[in-house]
Length: 272
Image 1 (cartoon, helix red, strand yellow):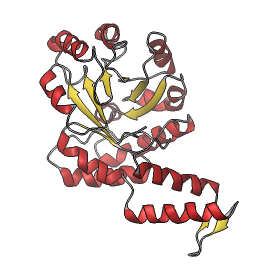
Image 2 (cartoon, one colour; image 1 turned 30 degrees about the vertical axis):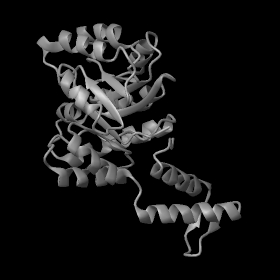
Image 3 (cartoon, rainbow, N blue to C red; image 1 turned 90 degrees about the vertical axis):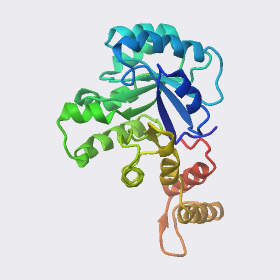
Image 4 (cartoon, rainbow, N blue to C red; image 1 turned 180 degrees about the horizontal axis):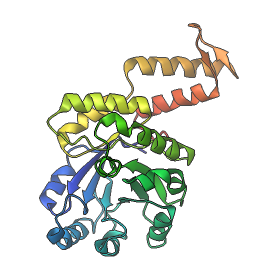
C-alpha cells in the first residue's frame, strides 16, 4: 500500500479541473465541496462530484464535505458517501468527538477530521480516538489562524504540535501539513515543509500541481537518512537489545522501528 505524501485539493464545481488533477501525480485528490465552492454553486458541485465518482477512480479520491453544522453537509453525505469512487471523507471544522461518531453511523468510508478552531484543538485527542473509521486528523490553518488571531506563522506551532501528538497517541499516522496558499512561492513552500518536518508532520496538502514535487522532495528520506537507517537495521539484525553503533550512537527498539519506517517510506510503502 502506498503511503500518501501529497493531497491535492480541487474545487468540486470544476469537473474539468478534477479530471486533470486525477492525472497529475498526486497521491490523493481531494474534491472540495466546501471553501472552494460559492454558495450558489454548491448544488452543482455536489451533482458533478456524484456523477464523476459513481465509478472507481485511478487514484484515491476524498471529498471534503461542508461543515457538519451547516445545511449542505447532510446533502453532501447523502450524495457521495456510498459512491464507488470515494476513498475517504474529509470533515471540516470538527470540534468534538461526537461529530465523528455521528457521521460514522451513516457511512463505512474512512473519515479524516480537519481541526480549524480553538475548540477543535482542545479536543484533538478525543477526536482522534473517537471511532475506528477515523483514519487521520489535520489542521485547517487559515480558519484556525483567524479564530486564534494569530498574525505570525510561528504562532501556530503549538497547535501544530498538539495535533501531531494527538494523532500519534491515538495510533494514527502523523498528519499532513496544511496548504501553502501562495502557489508561486516554491522556495517558501520548501522552507515551510522543512519546518513542518521538524515538527513531525508527514506530507502536505496542496492547491496546485506545481507544489507536488516540492512536497515530495521535502518529505521523502534523504540519501544520508537512508544510509543511517540501513546501518541501524543491519546492526539490529545481528544483535538484540539496546546497543551502540560504531560511531558511538546508542540505539534501542524505538530507534530501530523508526529506521524501518524510514526505509518503508522510501519505498512509498505504508509506514504507520
